[in-house]
Length: 193
Image (cartoon, rainbow, N blue to C red; front, side, top):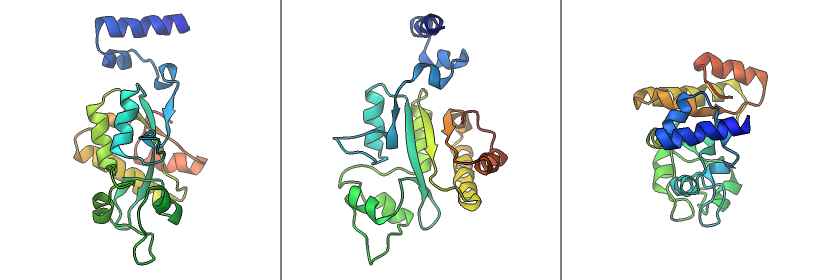
């Protein structure tokens, strides 16, 4: 089987584009052995979920990346582990006025570790549109139905708004219980779980 897969991939490279491989029903997990956590590391820093981490991972040949998703205080889905005190410390950001909440304006304005670009879910979808061989594993952190609905409806709505619903077939949905599967599947029938 491995020889057959190697042959198929070689033929795709020699006689077509990488995208031809996707049309041949080879699954993402059959040719990707590495997953970059939180979009990978950048300058030795982990868990930034930043644009620079994405580009660094891509340049290293990594095509499957996990992204942490969280909602800002005003309801925008962004690439961030959470808004807990520890994350502010890790990302070298300050808690303002004793609140760990962050709205989208502050989120986009405040660089991660003073130099890396924060990403929204829309930014992630646009990167997937540009880099057609990338798969993203979702890490939504939440398991309650309300947050799951908000997060995944946001992803689907954003893909429709950006005219890139095809990238939804390259999202790999991470779930934590059976109810979560049912909730997400009622929003959109994702291909990869």
